[in-house]
Length: 156
Image 1 (cartoon, rainbow, N blue to C red):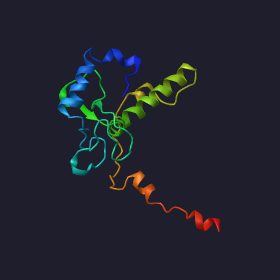
Image 2: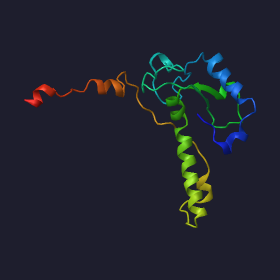
Image 3: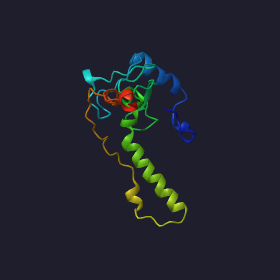
């Protein structure tokens, strides 16, 4: 996932090398998620591989490096996880919700709007990632099973 310019200073200078080592040397180019995203992966580990179509979404996988505690300065091995886009976004889901709430409240305050939340309400706490049961039937598979109209019959 791209790093926002305002957050670049939070990453170590050797972040590209650290991220590459996690994604390709340690993980072997495969997503390391074993359920941190809330999904129940078949075989226990997400099967998504870098550069290949994602088994659930069909889009090309771009392996990323996720910070499990959402702190870019913390590059300890046990805090980093090679993750496909789907798993990374799900891992960060709660963090993104909270960040968006804080950003919107700050924008409203800057515009002179009185906030309904006190400063203590705006302290970041991470809600859990919502669970989603894994199904062998992906969205694409469901679409492929939809009955198609018989065009010859409709024309008559």
